[in-house]
Structure formats: C-alpha cells, structure tokens
Image (cartoon, rainbow, N blue to C red):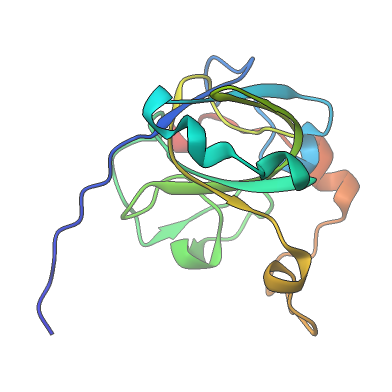
Amino acid sequence: MSEEQFQYESIGVIRTPFESPDGMPIQPTGADDVEGTVEIDESYAEGLQDLDGFSHCILLYHFHAAADIAPVEVEPFLDEETRGVFATRAPQRPNQIGLSTVEVDSVTGHEVIVRGIDVVDRTPLLDIKPFVPDFDVPDNTDTGWINASKSTIQSKQADERFL
C-alpha cells in the first residue's frame, strides 16, 4: 500500500465568541447556549440547500489554534492520567481535525447559525454533514475511560495544556 498525501482546503470559517482555546468549553455539551455562525464560501452556498431540515449537523474543522506537536499520549481535560491520543478528543493530533455536533438554528444564504459551538473564532471549516441519529448513534456503546457526567463536561473548560 502506498502512502498518499492529502491536502484539504477550507470551505469556510466558523465564527464564535472564543478568541482562544483557554477557558473555552471542551465539548458542545458544555456550550449549549453558545451561538456561532458558520460562514461558507459563496461558491459552496448551494450546498447548504435542505440543511435547515435537520436539527443538528456535524462540523469538521482544522484545529488551527492547537500546538503543532503531535504527541502519541496526552493528558485529556477529563482525566489526570496520560492516555493514547486516539482515545481522546485532544486537539493536538497527527492531523489536527476536529468535529463538533451542533444545533442548526437557521440557514440563510451562505451562513448557518448554530448553537452549542465549542471552537475558537475563525476556525477553518473543512466540511458539514447532517447529524442522523440512526447513522451516528450506534447501539450498545462503551465510552472507555471516560466516565464523566454531563454536568462535569458542562463545567469543564479548556486550559493551556493544548496551546
């Protein structure tokens, strides 16, 4: 098998009230009331057709504010133990791709107003996918080492460890 190099280009930008990762919610669950705007490049505006029929969408984006190093082990926000990076949602990754499932408030022209956004302002957007519970929520799941309650996740904020 040969290795291929992939290069993705931003299709837009995510606008939020968070100027840096420090103090930001660590997951959309902790950002329930936070509103953001997903601004799609005009050339992709027609691709937003019918998105307003979905209550939620998945945003895929580039962790542009994370440190460039890609450790194989990290200490995640919800734990004090070192974990393998692929068993975490840490922003420092070999390919700094993030995802957030957010609520779709409205779609107008080339903008999507969303709620529950947990990303830094001006984050480059890579893709949008509709959230479909029958596709995206498997039965009989295990959450590994993560046993934090929803209230713990909601109150936890990012700190300097991934800057």
